[in-house]
Length: 489
Picture 1 (cartoon, rainbow, N blue to C red):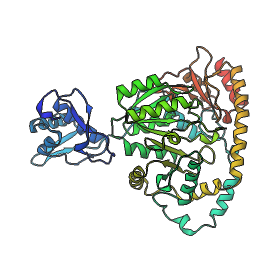
Picture 2: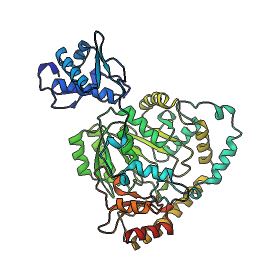
Picture 3: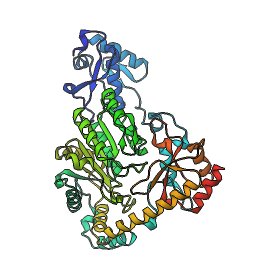
Picture 4: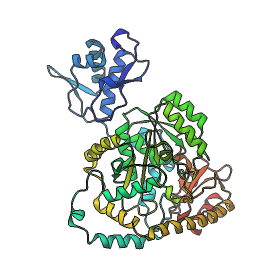
């Protein structure tokens, strides 16, 4: 559509391409609807500034060149540049053109979404959990205590690593990561009928980096992404860092509310959906086969890509439906890491996807991290997973967690909490507070007694979980229960 043909015609901006800083004019999509031509030009410049395609001091496209690119008249570009200069975003140099003025404002994640009370801010929960001194109690954190992890197996792997080739200890890793670890992951995929080659697996520095790489690869600023409500709060923070538009869909004990999901597809035309299908975080729910089938049918009909985080999969007593296994990696990307079952200190994650997408992700990983995960980390993971004791560790861990979930559920019910659902596995309980109580207020009161909690609205884009709390049963003890009891009185 030619913008020059009608003043009321909507502007268009780049979408559907890898966010590398260049704009593919042939792939423009209508992201700015019902705008004047001048507003559309201004919005495109702002998009490039936000995405760092234009940086401080850089010269803007010439008026005639940008007019051709945007399919508007040169006078429209002049007016747009003059307005942007009046706002202080760009400045003109006589005889030289227009340039980006000053520094591009840094990404402020606290300002990228709704202003939240700090007690229910996802970054606040993460920072309190990560920075808590050893004597603080952390039932709001997302990992197991050290004495629940396979310490002896890790130490054996460390001793074996000391005998490794010097290159493993001193050199950069390959772009794809350890071939042996990728082969092990491919064999694990095969056990659920997912036939993948090692060229479809990319090792990353962490599960979080896997999400970040996928956002960089698949999204441009302003693209819409669907998440569950509630969802893992770091999905929200990574998406905000990518300047994506976040739309949430209510989550049920069987998966996303499919009626609302279909409404969101029709209304917002999202690019991605990010979810946990095995032991959902924070609810502990499991995706039903019926919902999984409807999700995949909807994704095919609406050109939707699904990112499936399976980080909690090994905690299931029996595998639940996995979208990647059912669909075969055409529209589904699998990600995960080993931080929950092995070690959060040995950072290593992975992406399983179409081979052509892995090629694109490789370049991004080199550009942002210069190679894959640390060879030391990859070798430690491989050594521990290959240890015959690891399967026994997982079996014992599942049993221990089942007992602790029952114990903590009884204790929490005694304080007036009620479980939203009864998880099949894992270490989370998603609980309603006693009637009339607010999770943020409870979190503030507990923090004063050196207990870090995870109030519900930290997980809710719609801020609809004010009466819910996520508890990590492995991090709970009688002291936590006593603090909760005092705070509720």
